[in-house]
Length: 126
Image (cartoon, rainbow, N blue to C red):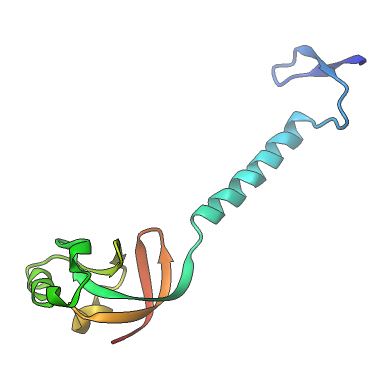
């Protein structure tokens, strides 16, 4: 292999061996930035869909994933705990709690967007 000088960021000269392609440092940074942005958007992408679960309270969380928890959920929300949406063992905070005020303790079907651990509700039905 033939060695050739290649300037580094600090201006010194180092040797780089011939490879099938020669990527400059600035190009590599751009490539890595694009790859990083792709993964960031993929990880934090919103999930749109329809889910069925229970409207519970933040105090009880996943324990409110049944019809027998209705009275407790209503009591806890009245005491000031935020309503949450429980699907299986997963608990989602509700971005607009007013939309679920008449469904506390009920099993509901929600159409909306989940981002992280929060849900934006487009449509809710019993």
